[in-house]
Length: 273
Image (tube, rainbow, N blue to C red; front, side, top):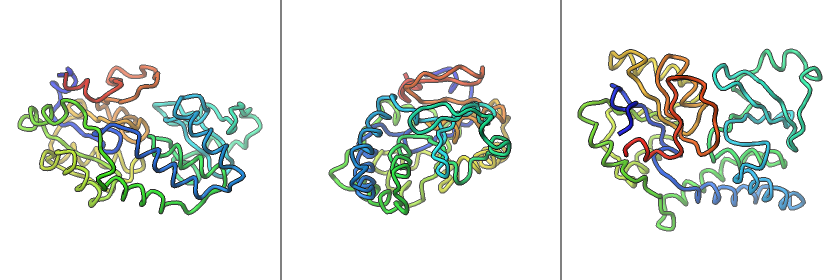
C-alpha cells in the first residue's frame, strides 16, 4: 500500500473518473452531443474530440474553456490564475491584447468551464460548434450507464484495499454527482456501505474547500492527516494542497511535481499495490 495512505487518518475520494475506469461513457456522451451540432460542423466536432483523446489538441484535461470568447486557458496549478491564453486552434494570445480585468477578475464561474475530466471534453467541443442547452445529453448518458449494455470496468484491488483500511481510517466520498446516481454507482461497483461519509452534489471546485474544512472539523484531524484522491486537479487536488493536505492526482498525462505533498499516479490501483 502507498505510504501516503499509511500515514493518513482521513481519505477523501472523488467518484466519477476516480473509483471506476473506462471511457466508453464519455464516447457515448459525445455521440449524443454531436446530434446537437450543426451538420456543417459535424466532421470538425468528431475530429477535434478524437484529437483531444490523443492529447493532440490545445484543449485538454486541466485547461479552462472560456465559452464567451472561445479561448482555452492554461492555469497556474497552485494559484489557479491564468498563465496562458490560446485560441481554439492553438494560437497563443498576447496578454497585452486582453483587457486588464480579464486576467485580474478571472474566477472558475461562468463563462469559464474547468476541464476537470473526460466528461468536459465533448461538452465544450459542442459549445465551440454552437450547441447549447445540451444537459439532456448528460441525462441520456447516465441512463445508458444504468443499462446492461454498459459494463463499468472495476479497478483492480480497490474493493479489497478499502475494506483493509476502513476500520482504521475514515473513508469519505465527495462528489458532484447527485444522491440517486451515487447510490446506484456504488452498488454496481460493490462499494456501498464502505464510506463513513458520503457528500453528494458537492459543487466542486467552488465549494471544495468548504467541504474539506467540514471534514477536518468532523473528524478532528489536522490538514496533513487528510489525503484527497481524484482525477480532477482543479476540483479535488488544488484545494487540498492549498489547505496543507496531501493530494493524490490520478492522470496519465505528464504533470509537474509542484508540491512535496502531491503524489501523481497514472492509475488508482497503484495506491493499493
